[in-house]
Amino acid sequence: MTEIADIEKKDLLYKGKAKEMFTTNDPDIMWVHYMDQVTAFNGKKKVQMQGKGQTNCEISSLIFTDLAKHGIENHFIKQLDSNNQLVKRVKIIPLETVVRNFASGSFEKRYGVKHLMKFEKPVTEFFYKSDELDDPFINDFDAEALNIATEAQMQKIREIALKVNDRLKEIFNDMDVDLVDFKVEFGITNDGQLLLADEISPDSCRLVDRKTKKSLDKDVFRKGLGALVPVYKELLGRLEKVEDVK
Amino acid sequence: MTEIADIEKKDLLYKGKAKEMFTTNDPDIMWVHYMDQVTAFNGKKKVQMQGKGQTNCEISSLIFTDLAKHGIENHFIKQLDSNNQLVKRVKIIPLETVVRNFASGSFEKRYGVKHLMKFEKPVTEFFYKSDELDDPFINDFDAEALNIATEAQMQKIREIALKVNDRLKEIFNDMDVDLVDFKVEFGITNDGQLLLADEISPDSCRLVDRKTKKSLDKDVFRKGLGALVPVYKELLGRLEKVEDVK
Ligand SMILES: Nc1ncnc2c1ncn2[C@@H]1O[C@H](COP(=O)(O)OP(=O)(O)O)[C@@H](O)[C@H]1O
Ligand SMILES: Nc1ncnc2c1ncn2[C@@H]1O[C@H](COP(=O)(O)OP(=O)(O)O)[C@@H](O)[C@H]1O
Ligand SMILES: [Mg+2]
Ligand SMILES: [Mg+2]
Image 1 (spheres, protein in one colour):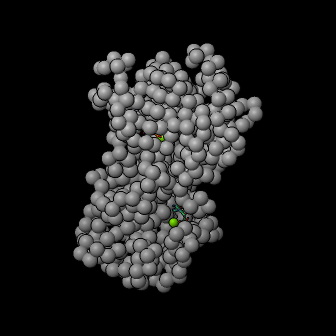
Image 2 (cartoon, rainbow over the protein chains, first blue to last red):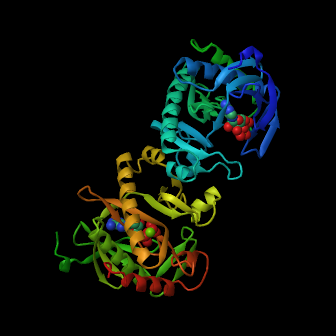
Image 3 (cartoon, rainbow over the protein chains, first blue to last red):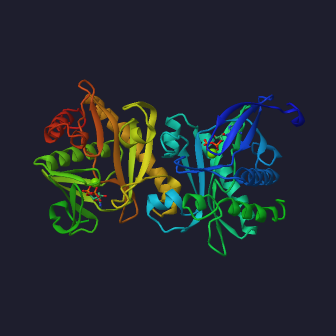
């Protein structure tokens, strides 16, 4: 492995809705640039926002560092500066893994249940990551039939996702925030390891302030509830105060 | 248990889209009347059709009798006449269990795959039986969280549904017909047994003639491809010729 100090950014491999992924001079390492851009509804709503990339990059870096400390291996290597990270390169499994502690979003809509109904135990769902198909809800049997993932991978993914949920709930608890739900992505490293990847940030979590009941996540943007970056900064501020995380 | 000959039809308990369910003088037995009515798109398309109830009643009776002979217990007790059956009363678990051998219908649409793409092994899916919600696709974790079924019930249901698929494929094979997919329902008897229920008919199966590639099922109605009852009668005629079934 190349020394971290010697890593150089190479080609833009993929420009997504929130991040740019660059190759580096090490085939096992990717350079992630968090953009000052936020999108919703599969890219149909899109806005540039100064400071958004930075807060997400910092929040995601803090969380991935914490998860690793708590035994949950992940792709994060190092935060380089305000908007850039180095991560282990994976081949992403095109499944968005959702863990829900309270009903919200598509769950609430699909099943017509009460907003923020609390689940007795966390619920997991997979969505097939496909912009053209609008990320359809998928089950294990369909995903296997479509060669998206193996049954063993999906079992392992669920297991890790539930561990992430346990630790995230502890962190957000210390911030006086309810973790409603979140989305994670997994991939396979060049040497075949299944690894938690992508980001964990207010873009990919639903978070509700326990006192004010206000959203501290991308729902502020989805629902047009006000300026997003101050909310993300407030969240980052609280996160930095959590013993163990800071 | 009341002697079958002494069973009397009592109150209409439920009038569905294709059948009327009556109580009888035996609390463990229901009287099913197959109506001359066909619906599609969650009841939005609805037509009266003479002879339709009879063919479905006969097809379903033949298939349930055959399944029982092949070790798959089910609610069917007896066909009374052209349009009426006695069945064991169950409390229906509100899940439509779908088994797919080839891609069609909502699968094809949801994942954008080729019509009639063959699966390496059969795929199972659950839909939450709810007219108001339009029968949404559901996974095991959601169904458990919503108290629709337990994990053990869903495992058992899948197991039985796949056995049904194995036997149905044998039957339709002898009829020169491909079983594309089908839907079954399960319920719990008064003494707590999980039991295959409802109907198995061209209303609930997708069937394709191997020679002509024509649909021999409700898709004829869904897609407006011509008269439905003659197609169902053709299917019944072939079914009655299958050694073992007749
Ligand atoms: N460690 C990694 N290696 C390779 N690709 C990754 C890694 N982590 C995340 N990705 C992928 O990089 C892209 C990140 O950019 P993003 O803006 O989030 O894209 P998208 O619009 O597809 O969500 C996503 O497609 C994500 O799956
Ligand atoms: N053995 C049974 N005991 C009680 N209810 C049953 C049994 N078998 C099927 N049912 C239910 O009876 C109804 C049958 O009528 P149908 O016209 O198919 O209704 P639907 O429009 O709900 O599909 C369905 O709701 C089905 O779940
Ligand atoms: Mg993304
Ligand atoms: Mg029905």
